[in-house]
Image (tube, rainbow, N blue to C red):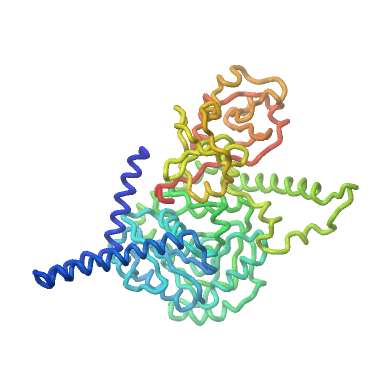
Length: 519
């Protein structure tokens, strides 16, 4: 779809949302008309309009002044679709069993059962986004993440009931290690090792069990390799590093696995707070699709996940190995005095507080896994080029043949701004055309491999790399290469021996698909 077409659809979507959220305006207008005609009615109508516009302008002013401000609390995001009674119960449980400060963000995916209206009537700490169409789990969560103002964020399924102590115990687990990034609870109904045996059958009997189970006990906290997306707790800092969920997954399933893989690539650990139990009714929205439709959606999403990641566990393991090597090399350099003596006998002392500069330095951002020299754009249409860890804005028309990739605002702002590009001579094509480098396979020394070149070994032609910073960076999958516009015609074939002499760099992954251009 063209950029203009997507923006046209987005304008229609925005107007639809305004109709839902400000429907009281039209009702008030009808009341005024029923008050009769003449001077009195005209005066009332004029006063109403003046009051409305004054209030609206004040709301806009306060919104603009508070935009980007973070409050020291938790934003709880609940995406929902046609599950009004479940989400009402969920919100009530949060209000009853969660200490302040917090905000609840209900993102309604165009429900037909009055969910948005019921949430708007509820008021209180609940903020509502009524979308014009069903954007699925990923799209709903992303919209909520965009609205979130809390220092910490919880993503929560609508068919859950939180219990006393749930958030406090999860927060303790999150703070247990500097690299702990995402924490989940245990529950009665889920896949993986977060499911536990429970003694109750009826929800009424669940509360007494949860009260006993949720007694704070840090010995029940453990690391895990996977967290299901029915309930996540993480920091705003992690969101800024990992980014939004991939909206290429239809309706639901596998988008949570995708996001967790990216969190692990960024260097974060995953934790299960075994002393935090919440009740989960289980896949209510997905079951509403019907068995046949559910199987189709699940199969398609699984295929997309495999296409995007290939072997994600091997990818994470390779990245961890590269990270460990980088840490060792850095530590050896930093802990040597000019005389070559160690400056600190215990490196563990340097990882003592959450958010320390040392740990932050070791964590990575999503853009660290984007190719060098690629072109990216934001929702405004501004185009940037990633060059040596900086984003350099194009202050010239985008050269022919270059198709910038749309990225979310957090991804873009996470890259330091460099000097803008102001002349066509500064803008080399992307990807480098084979004719620009070598027409024949490169057999000479590594110096012949130019920065930005896309290469493959002659004996492994399906595995592609980019030469970046004197390192070889492997494209995680053919899909990742395709998302960045790399085709077989860009490949320069080199000898396997030559390729092996080049140090490995971070892999190159596909950016998430974003269907909502407001992100």
